[in-house]
Length: 543
Ligand code: G3I
Ligand code: 9MR
Image 1 (cartoon, helix red, strand yellow):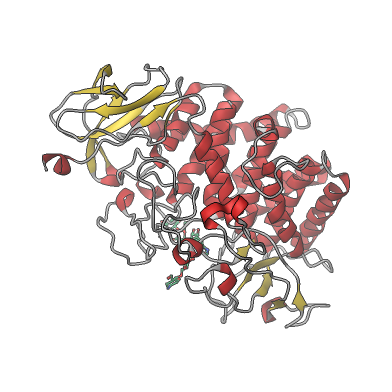
Image 2 (cartoon, protein in one colour):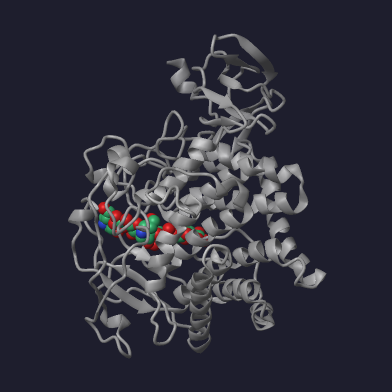
């Protein structure tokens, strides 16, 4: 009873790397000591709680238990007098292995245009939905050889999120982040499998999964002019039914500059990744990227907004400088053509943390990884600086934070968990580029946060940790007869906007989360949210 009032000890419910920092967060109290206990209840470690400090996003006061110097692999709990024991967690080298595999397998579960057989999907097996072989050209997309109502095939791809639509802008950053995971950690991925239908073929599973979406993306380009449609969607969001029962007519909607540039960046990246396996396919991707770039040059300011009869996700954006810089950088890296680097320099790319609407940092990620030898040292250092200076800011925030996490009050918007994961994505770039451990420490602070060391005591990934979300805003999870949600999905997370008006228990930004189907603004899942989680978990283990 007293314990309930005091709150709970928050840990990374999955666990910690032996050589990584290890923090637990303990609600403020008069107690000054903590213990680690092993599976037999034996005290294996004793430490002092660091002095209590406030954390503004949660409007609460906490103390930190730091057991970073305890490196013995095993299974433990944190004990503090007067509090319930913390959830159990492990210390192990491969501690994030299962979480990683679940997070990437989630893409398989969100595949459109295919049945998920028992052998790969287990309890979440389902019949095929959305063949997308008879998609209609919407009036907003009619042009040239494709008048309104023309029927097109545009199968495959991943459902964007908890809805069944497919959006190029959001597919762009998601697919790129997974391609970057492969480029940066190819040794980790080359022999790693997670039981998908293509497992065992010549391609690594990660590339097989990515291919499912690239196959769809290719169909979204108009071969007549290189322009790319913004989305493939129903006119309204479907109800909470299984894919096979969501049979409303789907439409190809409006070309736009953001979609076309994001497409160019992804196809350029895919071209260099796939060249090793299929040279012809790599050429096709490169040509698709170049054609898209040309369309965007001729149509530099086509802003997408929902046509009046379309009410699904908008992914609206009217500033294309970042998309242009990103596409130019990827085309430069892939083709070696200086024209694209000049285009990149002409528009310029800011620093910061990436999101679906702000992709400039992705240009720096690719340039810093690939272009040390092809750029002047000044040009190369500019990209490194953009990443490292952003990471420095995050490290400061991390060190100042009572929760040891670089999230601050203004970060708690729709999809805040992906903001966190993308902070870790940038921190790991700085870690690779400088070798300085503080960047890895701050990235681990985010992983701990996402997996349980947070004010809601949730591990924000379905089926991972001791208290994961159970009622995600994900149509298959809601509509199927399985009690547990589809595993491996990172939920959007605390969102001070609370736009869905569900039954939130707190107004504090970091507590604006409800594990309920009702909460599409805090408890939906999305392909762009899982991608940086996959990248970061792989990066921490590949290291
Ligand atoms: O960035 C601003 C911030 O500066 C401002 O202070 C704050 C105040 O409200 O808003 C922030 O913007 C928010 C933005 O997300 C942040 O990315 C917007 O309010 C918020 O409305 C916007 O939400 C988007 C949401 O669609 C609604 O349009 C999410 O980013 C986006 O991830 C989400 O995407 C949906 C698709 O439309 C449909 N499929 C599911 C998917 C996930 O929910
Ligand atoms: O279910 C929809 C979700 O997938 C979208 O991300 C979200 C974005 O606006 O919208 C959800 O649909 C809601 C609609 O916008 C408003 N009425 C309630 C719908 C959810 O039940």
